Image (cartoon, rainbow, N blue to C red; front, side):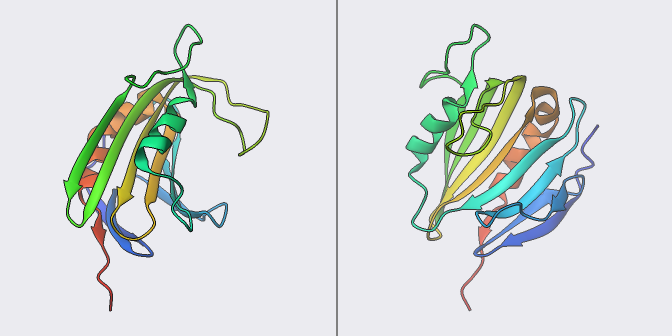
Length: 167
């Protein structure tokens, strides 16, 4: 799988962005999910969901910390506060926090559930977008080899996010 470099415009209430043509949009599986995409790749499909929670959903730092608890290192220990990559990008009026984590994915299957995933060699590419009301969360999770293909494109995608002007 090699990204073509071609994109198409997508929109969620309040934001415009462009995604690679290879990403397949599908209906949201819950009211919290504004959009969902399937990202194809050599390790199998990854999923990207776009979330926005009324009232905010927490600040970037607390979400990054929570996301780190959803991964374990090869020895089974949790990711620490310095594991993975976190980059803040100022793009007035927006502030983006870009996150890249990898390891064994051990998140709860559903919020509050005792059942957890146990997916080794997984990765998360995420963007927290602040500055347009309640934050938006773009979160891709899937096989590391698949998300490695999309990492450069994900950065370009995040950089192209813009606010939809109020009418």
